[in-house]
Length: 325
Image 1: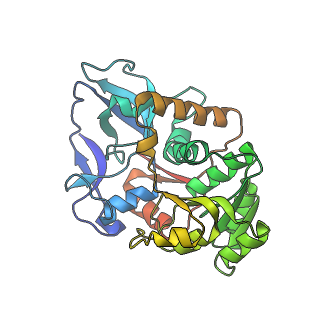
Image 2: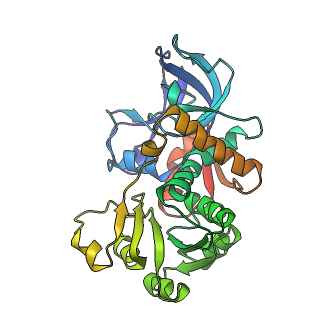
Image 3: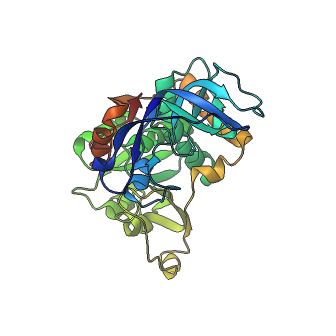
């Protein structure tokens, strides 16, 4: 028997249960991982709340973690029992001591990267990799807007953008978070609690706006984001922290300057084992070179996942938070 977090109905953090369960033996193409650390991410709250539908209920949570290979299926090649591995792209079940998942969702973890670092960085870091390195063709000197710059994804984006020579304007909700984002490499910050974001973007870009705007917040920032995109620029809507964007009028894109919009997911970019490992290798390289600092600001026992999710949803976290089985 092992322990995991599961939920039998959708709702707030109170629906999460810490229970005993019997982990399955891995199938022919699967690996069972003994988790040493598990990542906490906004997408976990989407499954719990019902915004995203899990395959069935009761369901576990979590798509990110790191640990040792505990068992392998009969057809698995490239992994052995005892290997250090990490994962970020599902299936659900990472909030557990033992997690069975397809071998093609795993990456080899270099000795230089700790389990806690990997659990804190895999999903957020790979997200930033595809956003800044693949979704748009960013050039040194470009000025971009990135919402929630002091959060888990945002803090990595600040650092990676600075390494690329890209000037990142980060939106934040307080002076404390503004200072944090600047420490991480933001070129400028906008405190949306008392500043007009679109107006400040105009001022910071000499009226040109931004060629690319990254929005992981969703419903609450959608219209503001459109107002910050330069003509023929790109709005990258990659998350729903405030709720899903609905009722989109495509005509608005022409009115605001023939804009482009994409709604990407990590799974579409890390769509083969080779692409996933290549992206992870670049991410691990950034950490090894000291260009990406993995700051773990919260550690909670797996049993306290509800507390950790509450703090995340209330935007009371900075950096990365992990759960320890």
